[in-house]
Length: 266
Image (cartoon, rainbow, N blue to C red):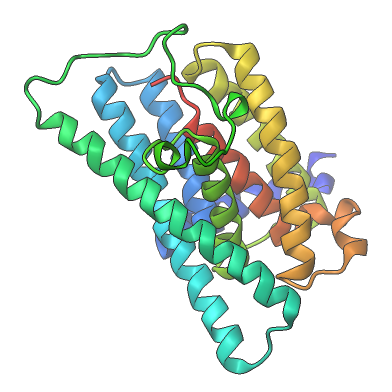
């Protein structure tokens, strides 16, 4: 029964994801980044500084690769004359958020590295009551824009990272599931992994579940929109079970994974 469902093909698909991760696929990298963070949290005893360094390092790599693939693809579309008004508009939006994501990730990573070289920096670990405001409680206003550009957990950071990560998936070397069955299995495994990730790295499990629900709603809509207008996939496929065998599903999973990486307790 499992063989008929396509489970026996899952290992080969995971092997493809691993090879893609080494080839620079943002979607594959973020999936293995989640696994690495779970392993660090469960198996290894590391300092808060090192844990955050790994998390911010993964986010920086994902943003750099996603921006590279997106900007390269966007440039090719413009130069080839194949870009219609919808592609130009989406590309312009993606370009703005790519700049935000690059600036925020580079600034955040650099500041954290600098802390490690500061002997007078306090050994501070956020508690449940002391955590920075989550993106669900922040408003993107003119007054906090500059703060958002230096805080990788602000609403601007979350939107920028998720948007550029999905653009990167659609513009890069991502391998979608070979069929719907394997896509469903992969998605189910990811959801289980996401729940384990929240349980092991979030202070408040309930808030983590809310975070996952919000990220899922935003990511699903974004993946369908980009899948149709950017990747020119038919809406009939994106709005059916066939969605699970498309790059849109990979982009959806990537967006969720990025948002979870940004919301850890450290």
